[in-house]
Length: 508
Image: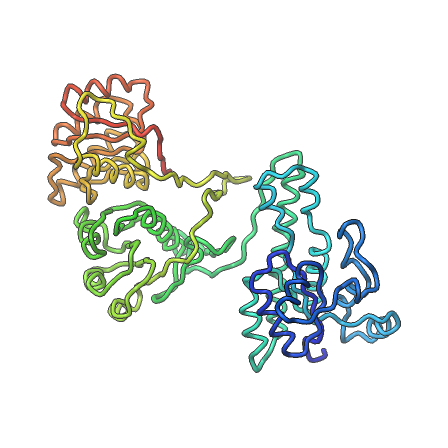
């Protein structure tokens, strides 16, 4: 195989971010650049000489730009096998020159559909030439580089400027990413045009995991997007397991839903302690005090930088992992003394506003939108004769935010700063109340004056009666039971304030 070099590049992009830096570097290194329309204009404005594809092929764009790159001099230049004498002879015969780099990204079909365009407009957003160019370049990766996203440009330039240059392995990697990209694109078009609803998903392997739910099960982590927990960076510690990733996601999701400095301690994807404070260490101490037994082997999440004082506290027990937006250098140095402790830094980009989550079942899978609704006391409705006081309102809002993340049936007791007793994953709601009370008493928390939060309605007054026995002063729950009237009457009789949120937050 001949030595790979880039002499000629085709650049035609709809997303023009970072394209001038890429094209400028190529131009400075003597690469001839072919381009089209708006891309050519932008590059010329940046002082980069380009050749219009229509001038290069001798064929003008037709049908309003629908046909511009579908030409033998373009597709032939991309598909030309440089180590095939027959191809070389035909290329010379038909005056076809090799194109060594194809930089193309596609019309934003999905974004335009979401924006609500009509069907005729949607057809115009289906990219034909771009997909053809990318697939041709990816197919011929032994001789051609295909780049389909601005996210690839920096890596490409780093490789391009290095002593080793663009290797065969690099081109194969980008070819695979290109075919994944066109697959997703075609899937979006398929889903739009199909008479039946279609859901497709693909992901690239992010990393192999230590094992699955149990050591005898293998597991892998696939990436569908660079956001959320998948965009995180492991900064220290041994490799992650399947359960580590699930727990880290729970810690990440909970932490980022609080504006105050917060800390959550996770065991089996559910909180065993959750608190806010004036500093990470204060929030951690409060969260830890909720249940001083369960955090052993747990995962701790913060929504603020972990400083040295917090790291000192974290070092006192065995933990599986800590996840936070950042770590002070001194805190990192201290925590790294625990060689197996996994330290994970949040990704820079949160998930989309309403992403779809799915879970596999036998013969198929289920999908649902993510439960990302912000919880605020402004939407609460007082349903009892007694109204909450200011301190109670703050505790009710904290409790409603916290109980959302506990496995159903879920009940917590808390004050405005921290959980005091958690009962989750129970088959009856009154059972969850009893467990939450028992946990609070076990770890020395008085529940007098506390509030009780439930992830779903109370089906019977018994939960209210149990809460009253230990001195709870207010209740927050969704409401919606056929026995709401009985439950409200019980609260009134027992002198407990109750508010309805109007929204259930089950977590199975």
